[in-house]
Length: 73
Image (tube, rainbow, N blue to C red; front, side, top):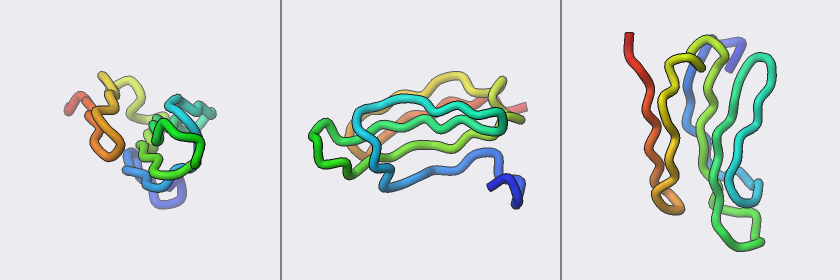
C-alpha cells in the first residue's frame, strides 16, 4: 500500500483475536475480530501516516460492520 500510495484501505479476514491497533512508523491498522478463539472473521482498516491526523473515530458495530470517521479536507 505504501508502493501504490494508498492512504486508507479496508481489510478482510484479519486473524488476530479481539480488537486493537497496530502502529508502525508508516501506518496504523485498526481491527476487530470475532469474539471466539477461532481466529477468523476479523475486519479492519489500514490508515497511512499521512492521514492519521484526519482520523476521528473507529467503532466496531458487529462482526462485519464498522464505522470509520475521517475528516475530509
